[in-house]
Length: 190
Image (cartoon, rainbow, N blue to C red; front, side):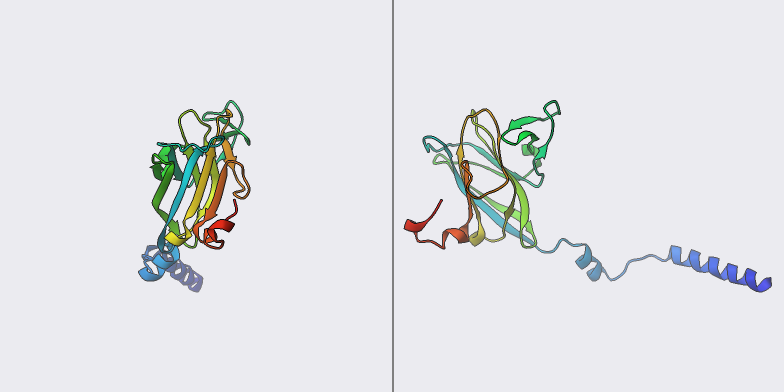
C-alpha cells in the first residue's frame, strides 16, 4: 500500500512539474515553423476603357483584397446583382493595395505582398456610372517581370461582372508580363 501511495505521489509530482515548465523551444526553429515564409512583392499593371468605344477611363478605382466574392441571396446586406447572381464584393476598406487610373486609362499597383510563390487576390475595378468588374481570386506573382496585366473593358449593363476564369473573357484580358514576351508584337493574341 505504501508503495502504491509513493508511486501516485511521484506521478502527481511529475504532472505538476511538466505543467509548470515554460515551453520556449528553439526560437529560430519556432519562427521557421510559424512564419508564412519570406515576403516578396508583386505588381499589377493595366488599362481601363469603355467596352464599345475603347475610350480610356480616368480616375477608376482599382483595389485588391484577400477576401473572395461570396454568393448570397437578394435580401442579404451588401448584396449586389451580378452576372453570377447575388454576391457580396469586398469593400475598398478591405483592400491590401489600391490605385486609380490615369488620364490615358492606365494604372499600376506596386508593392503587393506575396507570401511564397504566389498569392490569391480579388481585384475590384470601379468607375462612376459603369458596372463594377471583379476578377475573383487571381494569382499575383512576385517580381516586376511577372506582373499581372489586366486590360479591362467596362460596360453599363446594370450588373457587376464577376470573372472567375481569366482566359477568354469579354470584359478583361489577363496575362502575366512574361506571357506577353513570348510573342513578337505583331503576333500578340488577345
